Structures are given as C-alpha cells and as structure tokens.
Amino acid sequence: MVFRWQDVDNFYYFLMDRQRNYRRMGKKVAGVFQELDTAALDTTRGYDAGTSYSLKVRISGTQLNAYLNDELVLSGQDASLSGAGRAGLFCWGSAGAHFDNFRIVDL
Image 1 (cartoon, one colour):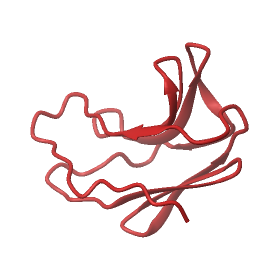
Image 2 (cartoon, rainbow, N blue to C red):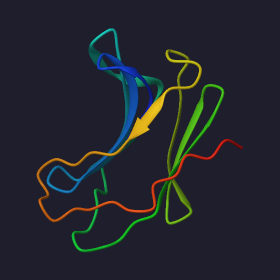
Image 3 (cartoon, one colour):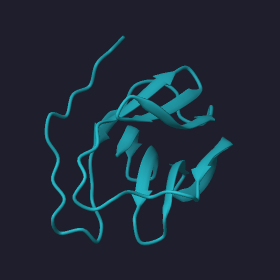
Image 4 (spheres, one colour):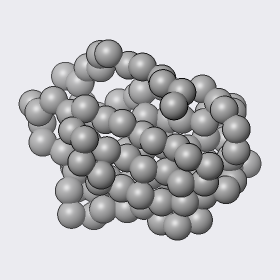
C-alpha cells in the first residue's frame, strides 16, 4: 500500500513480503527509499499465501500505525511528508493476489 502519495518520488508505503519474510513501513523522499525516522520493520513475518488480510493504516500527525486483522503489527514515526496525499495498492510477484473494499476514512 502507498499513502500520503505526493508524486512518484515522495510517498510512504507498507509492504508484506512472503519470499523475504518481512513487513515494513518506509518512505521514498526526493526519489530515495529510506526507513522512517523511527523504523517500522518486522523481519520475522511476511504473509501466508491464500490467506485474506484486513489492512488498516492509521496516520496521526507523524505517527504511522499498521494493523492486520485489527492487530497492531508495525508502528513508526516520520515527519518527512506531511499533509494529505493519494493512496493506492500494489502487488509484486504474486499473480493470484487481489484487493477489494478499499476505503479512505478521515477520522
């Protein structure tokens, strides 16, 4: 998932990688991929193929939290990209993946 997307060189992202067994939130700022100011990385879990997940990303100021099935799985802080932006979903290396019920909610 990408969020607070400003343009191709400036956005935050959430990744789950089954092949490399990790979950992470990071950023791309001025065209350079980087960790958040407070890193958000779990190298013990990726995802299970064939399993449905409910992903929620909650942003409050500089606090970024990612929830899978309502369980907090990653938390980090970053002040690089403030304000609203676009959001979207993407997939790499998993032809069977699909997305549904994508919503953006302003709390």
